[in-house]
Amino acid sequence: MDSPPRIVHESLGDPSHPTIVLIMGLGMQLIAWPDSFCQALVARGFRVVRFDNRDAGLSDRTPGKKRGNLALAMAAAALRLPVRTPYTLEDMAGDTVRLMDQLGIAQAHIVGASMGGMIAQVLAAKWPQRVLSLTSIMSTSGNRKVSKPTRAAGKALLARPTDPTDPVAVTEHLIGVFGIIGSPGYPTPRDAMRERIGRAVRRSYDPAGTARQLLAVIASGDRRKLLATITAPSLVIHGAADPLVPLAAGRDTAAHIPGAHLEVIEGMGHDFPEALMPRLAALVAAHCSASAASPRPS
Image (cartoon, rainbow, N blue to C red; front, top):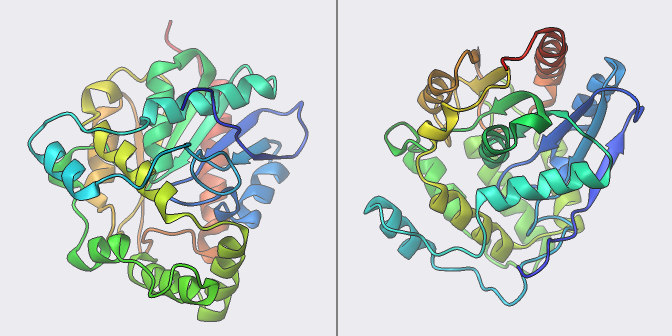
């Protein structure tokens, strides 16, 4: 991308309050951060900024680029060869920093989910002066040995709807995907899931953009050495029942970030069920507040 992409964002709460920046995962939009979660953080005295990553939602698309060859990229990564990609996770972390600059945010608490957790990790390592704390949710260090999804979850992630041009078909397809990767201990009622996913599909649906994001993830490779350089107070949250990014990946992430605390949530999969929002918001808010009160290493 010749020029930085235009990033669509939403700011909630008082701009004078400490800021929490939320980074969403693969192919997901800012509205995938539940309103109840965001409002709970605002109620605890934070400003919340959520946004669409490049190639998702209403933010800019990478011009002149097709989906990319995912099979070739995965084969190259397995052989530890360079992966061709139009952009990297570091570029996406740079998007977040530019958004902070645009909004006049010198420092923020950075919270990322799934791919967003990977971006947040890179941001914390590469731009430490901008990060008050890091929270990595349902994410991974890039260590392939501990990051393999179940067969069903991996198949669901790569499957396509019967008719990508039909919003109803796309919605039903995604309901099936989240039925596989979601939280068995906190199942979302089907009608509620249909409303949530349908809203997202109506707002934006771009599988080619998602494929390009996935290329960036594949190209990122193993980040364990990078994680070892993170100095921000770090919290790793992971569901014990996550079939897409297994708990072992969360444990590995926490093990490689100095001083990181791991919070395991029983019954949680790879989604944000409404029933867990009070607990997740409380964990994130407490971590951010404690981080603000703790001295940072020089």
